[in-house]
Image (tube, rainbow, N blue to C red; front, side, top):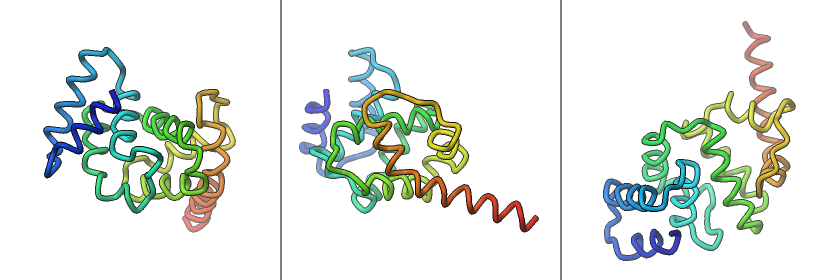
Length: 155
């Protein structure tokens, strides 16, 4: 499935958001996977072999947001797809935190969703990539919580 979507990207010049989504949606219907997996396949096909960085992700945010918005995905569902990507591409390392920061800055994932998912009260999830994501994202979460505390103090 990932190979099919990667091939679709390679054959499309230019890559049209609507055509990409239609192809991905047809793949989802024919194989019966959920929206989380659809987003993971999107991310994996756009950034094969662990090539995602905050910088390479930005030009593809419209495609990613389209998949997320169409699926009415929650923050936890979005983060699951990126955690699975990290679990497959362990070479991302600390770049994962910058990817999460970019998703936050681009309003793909809300501050509250990040804090709830990775904060002190996070559930101990056991899917591939979660523990690594938690470790890499901790400084970002602490910064977000500190910003929240400072905002509360000012009020």
